[in-house]
Image 1 (cartoon, rainbow, N blue to C red):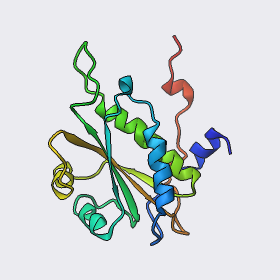
Image 2: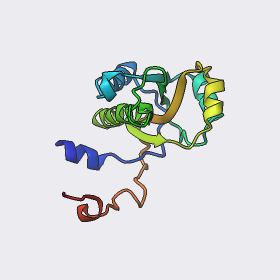
Image 3: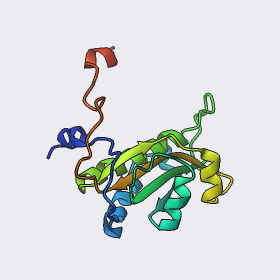
Length: 170
């Protein structure tokens, strides 16, 4: 499968089997995130891999969007380690976290796992439930698991604007 075929095959999975994700697969997914490029290679990402029943119950207090996934990766960044653009001080932690999460999401797809990128969560609840240190900022959550037999992409999945609407050649 080519990269574009893999990227096109991947969809936001919102229905999972009640099957745990093997540690070896999670480690491969996390390794894909570890090699992701970050600003100045500062690698400010901090990932909380949630797989225990207790951890998933905590997560359910923070978001209604687990969809039965048996693993979740709470992707955070350390604001003391992320690069800030000197011209205006723009924080790049969220950008770095998004790059890391994208690598992990696509690795999961290659391994036959479904994912959904979740931004609908209560950050204060994440901080409290998972006892995040003061400098750790939650960016998003990647739900990971085996797709249910009847899992389907949303109607919006294949709707894409033509390149001419999104790209400007200069």
